[in-house]
Length: 393
Image (cartoon, rainbow, N blue to C red; front, side, top):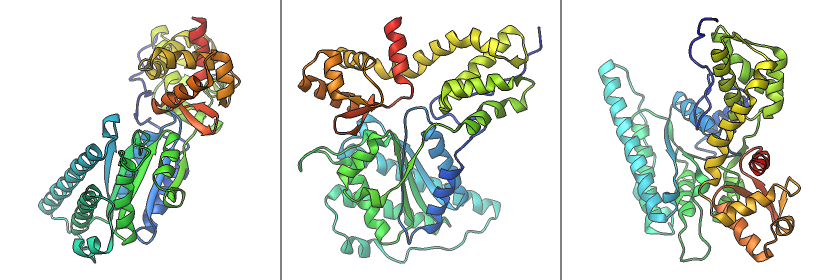
């Protein structure tokens, strides 16, 4: 038996930064360019992708890069409860208040340390902004004032600007009709109004692919307002780095063919790379070996898929109604991609109307997203494989 090799270097989890972040240089470079172009150019970005591709990790990297560039980041993970005008306004007001408190606290610490702050101030007052901008509601004006005050304080404390970083943004969407809830419009309108006044205010919204359609419905010009960034699986070489680099600080190694086999099996999805590595590490620890081999992978594969199903897939189906789960189960027998509503009607033996209602509910639940009219896709990678495994259990 070998001695232990230290802590497991792989980190499968929700929004947990891996020891080595591979393949995200492009988005980080474009984010930095966006900040440098502000405020003359609007600093708004949309990040979309399936579950487990590393969107939250990337958003947190954006926060670190913004701080290094002199901007003040305000990070928030949105919840289903935020999908009303008033709850979203209150939640953002709390976020901005905490940001102002953090700015004031940092200034006090810098003064104690004897560090000088550069002078900065806004060239316009709130009265000038409010007189020149017509807000659609009192809540929009309240949020605009909170944003303005936070940017004003940030500049006074020596920062370059303020950037909102909102995760799980697909949960916030406008209702149809004039008199419904329109929280996404409530968010966008004040930000756009202040950006047009060239205030150094940025906005990054991050979420599932349904976010793109939600933004389009809220603002028809959203494709011009938000720089789109689609986050997907890693290419083979970056996935290989994500798997092998964490081992470099340990005494364990991996067969090259084993690493290649993992990359091919997981199809480059970042969460899967971390999960496969973590399970192989634990298996090697139990077996008392120092090298990952294809033989070890073969022996560990049942445990890997068991954990994948329990931790990644099953929580996404547990809250669905029996009828919604039945339609998902039927979808496994349909050609994919994409799922077509006509094929689901045949496979499920439900009426077309019932299928369409259930598809809408599955989109709202975040299990599917609409590709185009009558065509849908799963929001989690390799989800069809999971449904087939569950059907054969």
